[in-house]
Length: 88
Image (cartoon, rainbow, N blue to C red; front, side, top):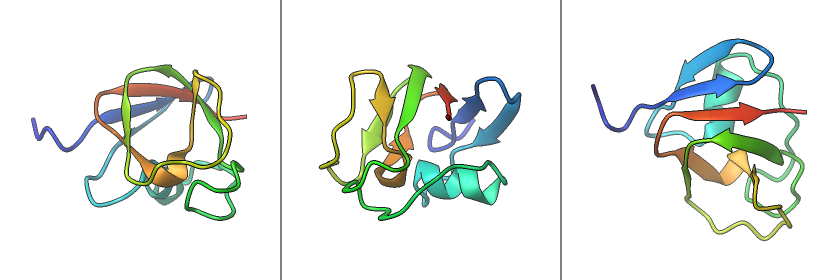
């Protein structure tokens, strides 16, 4: 198994995708037709704020938008393990 590819499960939608190493989590979700709101794509606005149920992500850019401990900004992170997320 390629360590750069991790499974992303979207809670409540039964969607499983693979995290491509050259894309953000947001880009991977969009490529797989998962509807998620976004705006700035750089961690400033918080529009893509998503609940991280399990797993770990790594930020490519440090987010400036406020997020709770159980939230992530898919626009500026990548999965570094299998993850389960909940999109509002």
